[in-house]
Amino acid sequence: MTESEILYKNLAEQSFVGVYIVQDGKFQYANPHMAEIFGYDLADFIGKLGPEDVIHPADWPEIKERSKKRLIGEIEKDYYSFRAIKKDRSVIYLAVYGSVVAFHGKRAVTGVVNDITEKVIAKEALQRELKRKNDFVTIAAHELRTPLQPLGLYLNMMLMDPGIYGLNEEGQKTITKLKWSFDHEVIIVNRMLDLSIVKLEKEQGTPVLRDFSPKSLVELILKNQRVRSNAEINVTITDDFVITSDIDYLFGILSELCSNAVLYSTPQRKISIGYEEEEDFIRIFVQDNGIGIAYEDQKNIFSPFFIADSMKLARKYGRMGLGLTLAKEMAELLGGGIEVISELGKGSTFTLRIPKKFQKTSTP
Image (tube, rainbow, N blue to C red; front, side):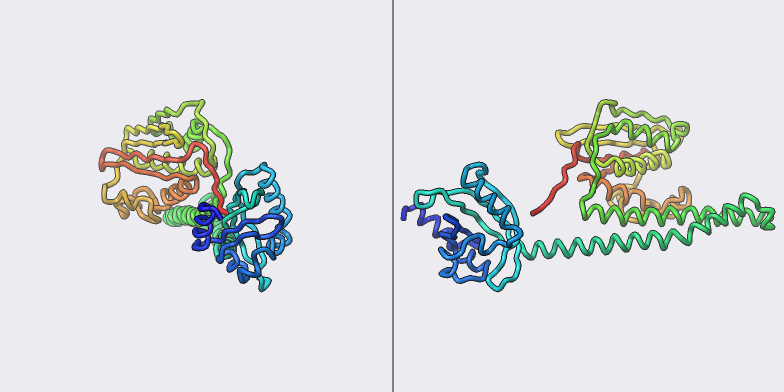
């Protein structure tokens, strides 16, 4: 045995991961942890068993093909996961990083094995929990919205034809206040449900990606909100700039930022919407000349139901402090975040930072 072979064996024997060499369909070498993973004594493992004996029959054809490609040089190194069968016939999940070595003058498949059974079980449990939560949100949406629909209909009918319902001027004022409260309640319910759904999708990582122009999206938002008549708005995003992201989530984020900028600005309202490019990220900023946010409140501005100077602003603007929370969750879902720079009496700048091309990630 050469010095390098002795060193390799000594390192492998002390390793906390399984190490193996397969040649001619059998494990010609395995460290103690490799045999332990499958529940065998080392003496019953080396030279007597091969991958086909321990890999789940449903996964064996793919693993066999991968090993073949490594031996003939089509694949130099490979990383994959599969199911395996222990000596007691229980099923485990393994991850392998494999390559090829020269062993006794011939090419052989070698690799490092990790038992990922607990990780896979935990992931499956998480998926079941996410499904349960998603089902709950769906039911909650139905249960919360259903009783509100006829209430809104009745209030509208009373306001449209107050004479039929015997409403005098004072009664109409009361119904108008009730309608305002109803509309406000609908917004709160919808925002809370939207927030729950976004949190679920954030855990599951499910953005729908497409290429689009942020400039066109911003113009659509401004048109829908009909704010140009109330504010001087300067958009400096170029027409030819394109990103890859989820257009619906970006629409929700920028709608909230633009709406807040106009709502909290002071006449003459001046709103600037622009962008800056980094190597892999884009920063879209919305700047206003409004009331500003106190420094001590800025760290909490994205918390649910938080409103700076809450009693005063909640009464004046009819806000419930969920919009920025929802925007932040959507930004994080897209792999980014939102920052705020503000000074009381001098306005605020909210900056959305997201990847130019959002990349989904996965784990074995």
